[in-house]
Length: 261
Picture 1 (cartoon, rainbow, N blue to C red):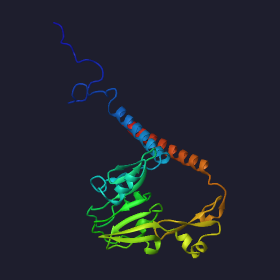
Picture 2: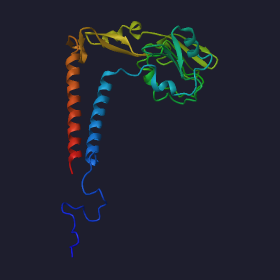
Picture 3: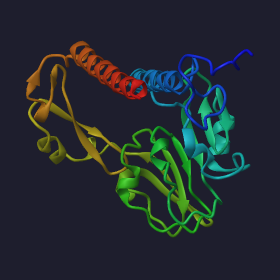
Picture 4: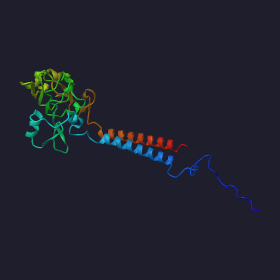
């Protein structure tokens, strides 16, 4: 009588394992983790390069959507936008057709604002700003730091013009609003500001009632004591090399972790 066939020779699957679980499948967990690590490193490098090379978003970004709806008919910004060639509304903003799309005006009137929106600093390039019909508390003057292009500002009557009346050519009242028009250059109104700047710097406006010291060419650095052009090419080369090295290091460490059993 023939003997019954014995168990097949070779490596057997672990006890209780389902069929197909005895050996790793091609493209399994290890390969997938390695691909994910490689994709993560490449995405990180691409994001860093975009942050370094691309300019900031033009056209106002989040501030244009900080209040719902389009420009209000008859508002200061709506009138300005309609009268300026090449300007068009975008949410609560008035922007110049690009590229690049430049922010010209911001209409935050009747938005039930008790304080300025978090993205208000994005509007530093505006020439016209409307804040009327809002229960606004008096914002700090520093809120308008950097608003060097601002020429017409409408605020609730309860508020003063930022920087005081002396920071504007004309301040008028109309109904429940106050109009601040024609931002003055503080460097022209007081000779004392020029003495506050270092020897190789000049006074420049920095918003209503604010001034700053800008280094005169070719000086730069602390107190404008360094002479010559800023080394842009070496700076960018070193920064790019460091970024690439960090990305490769992260990719290598993640790859080793993915290969580990």
